[in-house]
Image (cartoon, rainbow, N blue to C red; front, side):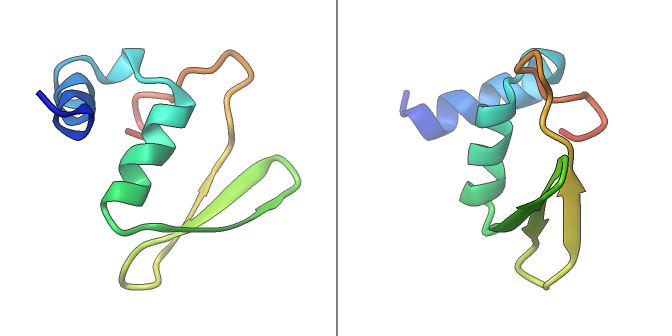
Length: 67
């Protein structure tokens, strides 16, 4: 199984155990573009130019509502 498929399976099966880095990798694979970090939030844009501000987690896990 490729890393991409493995990551998608992990996100689907157990999203609360996804690291913040893995979450950003998924965003990138879906065509989202990282724009900048302003203060405590990282700003991503969807392929349709919809902004998504995400606060990075200090413990390394993405929040379930973000995933």
